[in-house]
Length: 411
Image (cartoon, rainbow, N blue to C red):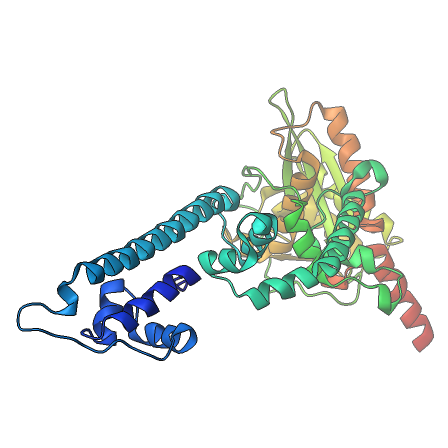
């Protein structure tokens, strides 16, 4: 709470009242004036003459009853009332202006800025008392203004760099959040130029640089109980490691504006997170998934021997035709439990990321041709440029290149 302020005129009159009315104690006078006894004692020591009139009581009239005493007492009370009125009026004006200034926020920094902006009207001392901040803290904040301006300029420059990284027209990716943006900013720079991920997250939040979000999903898994089933060889172990050993796949729909759907089948390498094979069609027949597996077989140089392919229990994956192709390529099939999306969580996550980043909040693609082109570009970028936190925030192709170099060095 701010301390009461009394002008010098009021303090001197209070001392005069005390010295001229010996019939009353210091506490009685202080109570009449609405001040503390200690304050009056301090003022007497500072402004007093050191001489107090002697008490002259009579049988019928005391000094407290004389007209002169009454006038002096009333003058002192009037002076105190005027001082209090001025004080309250000033506080009211300051607080009204502060309410407009803060506009619903009341951070300490906002209070400091309010004092700086209004110090020529009311003075720093009075402002700090009313809005309850320490003057020393205000001056410390004021002295740090140059540093704050420099940091704000640096944050603005960083925000501009982040916008470029999220701008597809400049080779960026709108889906990049703070972890991938940080990795992109720190790629190939010296230790002294690296940017802390917490700072990147803060700047993105303050400048509203967020990634895009996913919309709805539809059912693409249609189980066929009469077809062959396979054991779960992954047991929800989607960890990275040696590439070319374990794959996961799924089917997702791609909505078209005319109400139809395209369907995308994938074959993703768990070791490197690479999209090794994929195919698109306007149906969900078995050739959709066999084409995706064949694409992966070709991308791996015709070698999928002893590799594991994990999927859900969709009828296309349990079909005889797909089983025969897996046998031909030497692939071991693996399946999670019926109705458990968690058993194929990585493929589900891949599908969600693809639609979130390609649709960018829209309900559907304009037409099938634009959907084909968008997926083609995204799938290739996914392997060549998109960073993945699971593999050290590098792209899948870069991960496999480093893996090959390590194996060659060890040979």
